[in-house]
Length: 489
Ligand code: GLN
Image 1 (spheres, protein in one colour):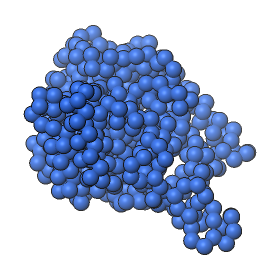
Image 2 (image 1 turned 60 degrees about the vertical axis):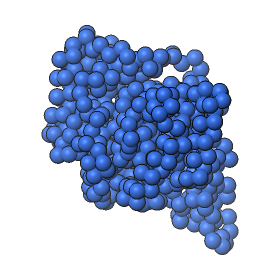
Image 3 (image 1 turned 30 degrees about the vertical axis):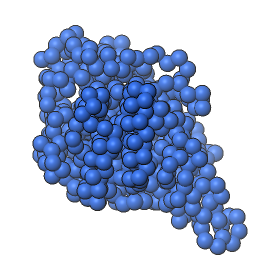
Image 4 (image 1 turned 30 degrees about the horizontal axis):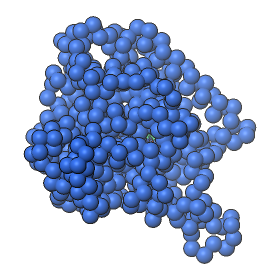
């Protein structure tokens, strides 16, 4: 406490050294003490959390412990939860109460986890800095003048600041990995189709996946083991996906003979020199551990951001058409007629970044432009995927920086959407390809964390976890925590 791993907390609970109620209270005290500064949580219901913890202690006493029994986990405000509001940090959903739990929320509850509240995020998960939230910007515990990344910035900030030991995020173009990187924690985006999207508010349905954000690789495995699996309620959730022994993957930590691809397109001029040095040093450590570095090329990488910013807004423009003042959330005052109600409810409810995406997407999908933009972007997507397939003929895994820069200052990029979009330059391609990716801490640039990104072939999250565990075991980055929040940096 407060920077204990989930697995340490689980051992303490199993040994009877603490109880779910005691843990919940200790983390609630941390939230009360620090959320004012970080703005990582947008909804915390103290009584409901303690009630869940009491029920968990009772379950343990009567029936024994389930896999996540009594462990506090926070979730991004994009997950529908029957308890409390679900707003996606948008004014258009203020006051919305979901009629059902997202599939992954049900899985966490059934595994005995205590849901600690909803975390801050960019509105509708569109952003890289958690500055577009209707609840105001979230802050990075390593430097509260800086962004925690985005869009799952609240989850990253809460874990990095020791307000909760683990959290869920979602990742459409990097929203788990980039905030994990700039907050110095670990995050996994599973293979597309591994995790059910039912009850996760849709941004870009062909890209969205949920995943864990934790302090250690093993904690990521513990949560993944619960989240992943088929759900008949999501048609994109894959039936009979290749199964993984998530925890065993963390024990197989021999890097000998592992071929790590180093794509030249991810080590470029213009990226931060300190980030590059930290990632190069991490790769040198992997060589010491027996891995071989193979120089590779992913030649279509340079088109990834452009293709993403056609495909993701196009899907978003369709997904967000349901917010019309009729069925969900906000309706404008005194509508004159139906069109006035639609127009004003949307105008008042959506923030400017969301409007920019809806306009871009509507334009790209409109007749006359569809072939030039949307169709072209889909073709580029296929080429990007093929680059990865070709690379995995030669290597077992790919390593890159997660973000080209460490956490930037709040407000620094808000006036320039293009530079903001470029902060995802290293994370987006693998979403387009549907591949699993992970970020783990690998050093610091002037006291700001740097993330190492691992990319594996589809369904091979075990390769990610093994490589990341080997690297984690040979370094001490996961023991670091921000001094201002009581950690050792
Ligand atoms: N930053 C990217 C965007 O703004 C990715 C967001 C995400 O993964 N949800 O779209």
